[in-house]
Image 1 (spheres, rainbow, N blue to C red):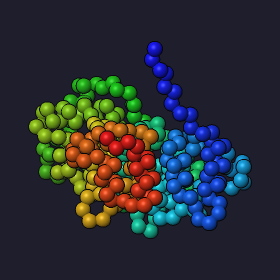
Image 2: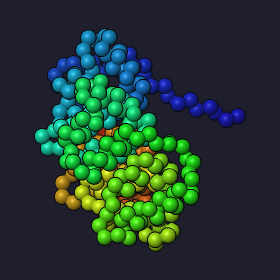
Image 3: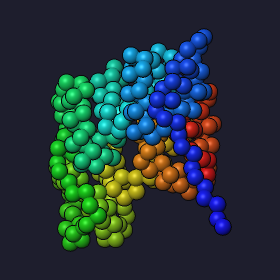
Length: 317
């Protein structure tokens, strides 16, 4: 007779809140205990822990974490404690209004989210910061195609299902060719229109037709015909439509290769994708680079910060 293996039940949010309080007490913070609890709890459980902590100790857990932790670990843990929409809103706000803007980070988050995620994000953004996301984009990006695309992308309703009208997809591929590679100069308006109005499944089909008809990828055409943040936005949209795991594996690779590590990108991608598609990202990373993502992160980070990121990444395979 087969033995039934019952997975271990995680402690209750109340127990976790008590253990966290104990980790903060005394001389110095037991950072390992904090990581072991928080890195292994899902978003719902983390929200309950925060409620319990507030009820029992009359203080916000996030405030306590901010005072007990520091540096890159503090940044990563505090982002992890948010639910996905608040986290995205926080990343975008910090990227747009910081002294040193990170337009790449804001663009990546906006252009890799679904229309329904963006609708909710806009509401949360306004409730958190008292301004509309559209306003912050207009005030903190240069007027031009990048700004036009971001504003169109967050405001245009797009279909989210897998259905595709193949005739329109083929036509779109031809229209993009005429607007880009076929003519002298680029008709950016056409790129903005198609990339902001078509669903992810549709754009994946457009990309496929483009390759079929013209012998190279739409991605390559975008790289040849556009530049700067506008190119980055278009490339994020098309690559996330075709294969988001491959796209984020590439972003992580870029953050770690060469001299120094781009920790803000490392934190942003690992924290935002852990509960979405990290297993696909890890598989794509291994396929492309013949090394595991865990091993690469291990060699680029250290201390509790390393321990936290590796805990989020999960098993090394």
